[in-house]
Image (cartoon, rainbow, N blue to C red; front, side, top):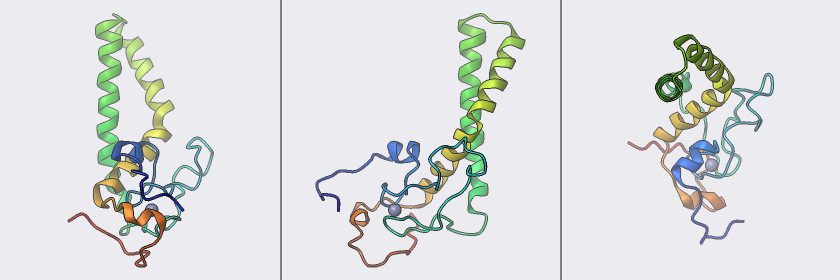
Length: 143
Ligand SMILES: [Zn+2]
């Protein structure tokens, strides 16, 4: 059991470390390595710590494609400015670097997008971290 004085993870740390948005403790994905074949999108049905369902509705994670697009554009712009603007590389060199970087980061961006997406819809409830609240499994929309 965790101490109540533990402030827990920040929102950004919870998203990056892919934790449950409600308790910020339970892992969102079954396998911690996103590059492991066949385990990329495998998520438990609910948080092992607080019981928060991870599939809020059917096809819930389709919306994470918008988040993924945003992250991809941000990486694209950063690599382009660094390669073309700062380092003065040729355009095709920058395109090659971009393709390599985006392919290499694909699994990480996939998970980061899902993590960001669910954090947009589920409110943080630190009291749920120790499992003392009895309404396990109840989804808590932010609205
Ligand atoms: Zn949880």
